[in-house]
Length: 315
Image (cartoon, rainbow, N blue to C red; front, side, top):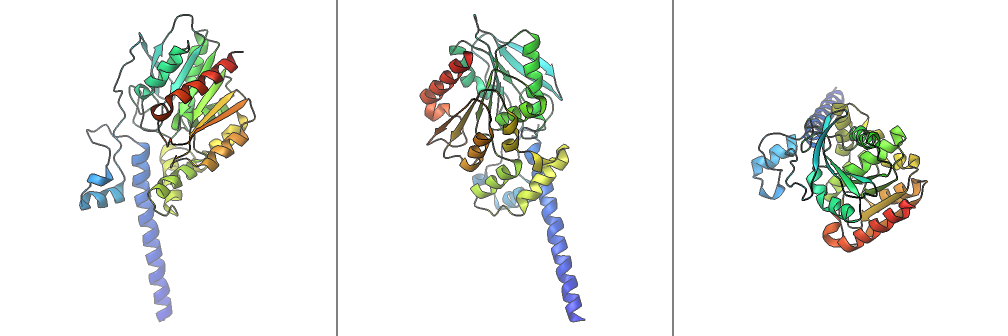
């Protein structure tokens, strides 16, 4: 009789813990995939009070909706495109253009964060199209799916330029933007002149685990619960969100860039992506760079490698 009661208590304890973990994961997943329009600052762990830390632990971090902080220095046109959401873009045209590069930002970014890279492509003689993914900048909504649904927006932008008569279209993306490009090429069989992808993660589950590992917190089982609820809330199977698999269906020239100190994307993930690319491909790493803008520490090298890639694909 005592043993039965003990088992019953143990079962209830396990059930309560399991339900509690799912509730916490549900809130965290929602906040990670939905930006807030309220005037809040991004959660800074160093400045939190004890109460704030408990609240953050239970309900997740605040992610303010990304806003464009700068405008292009060149003459530009603001355009709105209807995709799965209405998205806003800046179109910068150059004289005697060699083609157009479409630039896609990373998680928590917006198109103004891509202006420095746009400037470098313009110097090389290309026009650029800078894009706000859904939930960011001037685009509709407050949702992000870490590259899954954003892949449709990549397709929309490429089709827009194609209808304008542009034949030499390149896609550039960093982090989430790189993943969205890869999924778009996998799903829609697009054929750009070439793509440049910076630090794409290997899978949704791996990148979630990496965030736990960077905080020196065990990833099991919370990482799996976060991936499950994040996908469920946003209408897709997040465990199947795998750029390593998308890479197998990319056929256009590809330049893959990576920072060796990246805590969010492992070298193993990058190597697997590169191995799975069955196309004219090139790889370059930056020894002291993390998950960041490579122009900060390696501008000369970045410009050299990108310029060489663009010239090679022009032939």
